[in-house]
Amino acid sequence: MAGPGVAVAAASEAAGPGSIRGRWVLLVAVVSFFLMGAGWAAALPVNGTYDESQHLVRAYAVASGQVYATPTDAIRGGGAWFDVPRSLLPDDIDCTFKDRAPASCQTPAPDDESTERVASAAGRYNPVYYAVVGLPLLVSPDLSGIVAARLVSALGAAVMLGLAVFVAVRRRRPLLVAGLIVVATPMAMNLNGAINPNGWEIAAGVLLWTTLLTLFRARPGELSERFTRLLVILAGVSGSLLLVLRALGPVLLILIVFACLLLGRRASIMGLVRRLDVWWVLGVGAVVGIYAIGWMLLSGLSDSEGAEGNAASTIPYSDALRQLALVRSSFWVNQLVGQFSYGETVLPSWTIIAWYLTVGALVGPALAVVKRRHALVLLAILATSFVALAALELAYLRNIGWSQHGRYIVPFGVGLVLGAVSLRRVERTFGATGVGRIVPGIAVITGLLHLWVLLLVQTRFQFGQGSGLNPLRGSWKPPLGSFVPLFAELLGVVLLVLLAFWVVRRLPVPPADDARLSAGGALEVVPGAAVGPEPVDGTGTRADGRAKNGRQPTAVTVGAGEVGPTPTENAAEAVAAPVPPAQASRPSGAADAERSDEAVAQ
Image 1 (tube, rainbow, N blue to C red):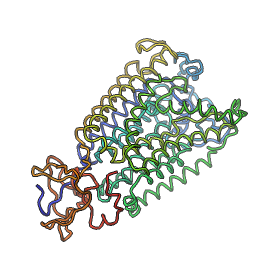
Image 2: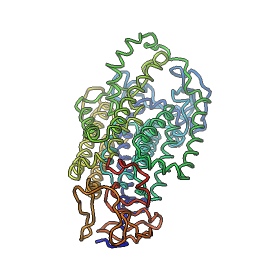
Image 3: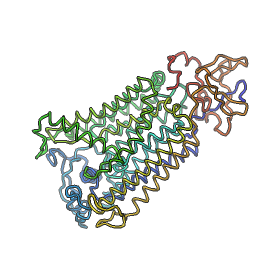
C-alpha cells in the first residue's frame, strides 16, 4: 500500500515513444495500414481510381522539374500541359469506366520514353505531394514505376494513421482505436494505394483530429512534457500537410481546429496557449499557409474558364436541389465507405449498411450520454459536412457541372466518430466489458468488409462490370498477379485485428467511480466516492500526491506497470494509474482554477 510521501507512477502513457512497447505499437499499426493500402496499389489497373491518370502526370512532371506550368485551358477549363514519356500511360486509358469493360481494354503503353505533350487536370495543384510520390516515376516511367509510386503514397498515409493509433494507445483509449479503425474505410485505403493526394489529406485529417482532441481534452497535468511536445509537433505537421495537399485544405483546417476547441477543456487550451513550442508551431503553420495561398494565386488553381459540354450549366436551381437531395447526397454517403473506379463500381447495399452500423455503434451511444453541448458539436460536424458539399456543388455547377465527392469532406467529417470516442463518458458508459467486446468486434467486422470490397473491385477489373468473382480467371490480371493484392490485404487486416485484441487486454478502461490502492497494490473501485481532490490526511500527504510542504514524493512501482516518470518527463506529472484524470493528482492550485463541472468525467 502506498504510504506517506509516496506518489503513484503515471500509467496513462505507458507506451511512450522511447519504450519498446510504444515502438512496436507504432510499427504494427503502420505496417498494417501500409499492407491494406498496398493491396489496393497492386490490385488496380492504371487509372483504376478517381483521376489517377491526371495525378500521375502531375507527379512525373514535378519530379522531372516541371513544377510550375503556365495556366491554360488544358482540360475541363483548367489544368496545365506537361511533357511526359510515352511509356507512362496506356492508350484507351478511360475505357474501363466509360465502357464498364475489364482492364484488358487498355492498350499497353509502348516501350518508348520519348516525351509527348499531355494535359493534366491536376496541373495547377501544389507540388508537395507530387514531389514525393513522383520519384519512382522518374526512375521508371512505366507500370512498375506507377505501382512503386502508389506504394510510396500508401506508406505516407500509413505513417500518419499509425501515429494516430500510437497516440490513442499511449493515452490508453481503446475506444479511440476502434474509432480510428472505423474511419479507415475501404475508400480511404483505395485512395492511399493510388496516386491521389486525397489519401494523404484524409490521413492528415485523422491525425490532426487525434492530436488536437488529445491535447485539448487532457486535464492539466495528465500529459507528460515529452508527450505534449510530440503531440504539438504532430498537430503542426498534419495541419501543414492539410494546407498544401488540396485547395480545400485551409478551410478543412479551420473547421477541424474550431470543432476541437468546442470539444476541448478551457483549462487545457489555456495551458497550451502559454507554451512556447505551440507558438513556434503556429508560426511555422502561418508560413506554410502563406505559401499555400501564394501557390493558389500564382498557379491560378481556383480559376477556371468552364468545362465544355457542361450539361448542368443551364439546369434550373429547383432541379439542381432535387438532384442534390435524391442523387448526389446518396453518392456522397456511399462513397464515404466505397464507390470505386470513377463511381460506376458500387458496393452491395448491405456492405454500406454494415459499415455504417459500426459507425452507429460508436456515435449513437455518445449522442445519448454526453453533455448536450458536446452532442450539438457532433451533430454540427455531420451537418456542416453535408452543407459544405452542397454549397460547393452549387457554386461550381454552372462552371464545371456536378463535381463534388463525399471523399473531399472526409478529413473534417471523421471528427464525428473521433470526437464521439474522445469523450470519456462514452468509454465509461460501455464499461470494461463493453469496450473489450466492441473494439475487437469492430476490427473483425471491418476487416472482413475490407477483404470483401477489395475482392469485388479487383475482379470487376478482371471481368468487367457485374461479372465474375473468381480472382483466378478474367481477361486481365493485376500487375503483381491476382493473389498478391488479396494476401497483402489479408495480412494487414490480421495485424490490425491482433492489435485491437492486444489493446483491450493491455489498456484497461478507467473506472467510472473513484479508486484507491488496495493493500495488494491493485486499484480498488469505491462506488459513490467523491470526485476530486481530498484534503490533507493525517499522514501529511495532500490529495495531489505531494507532502504537506509541497515537495514531490518519490514514485514507486504499482503492480507490473512502469515506474514513475522517465528522466525526460516531468516528475511533477506523476498521477495515479489508471485512475481517471478526474480523480488524478493536480498540481497545487490547479483544482481551484477549473470550473466545478470539469471535475466530472465527460
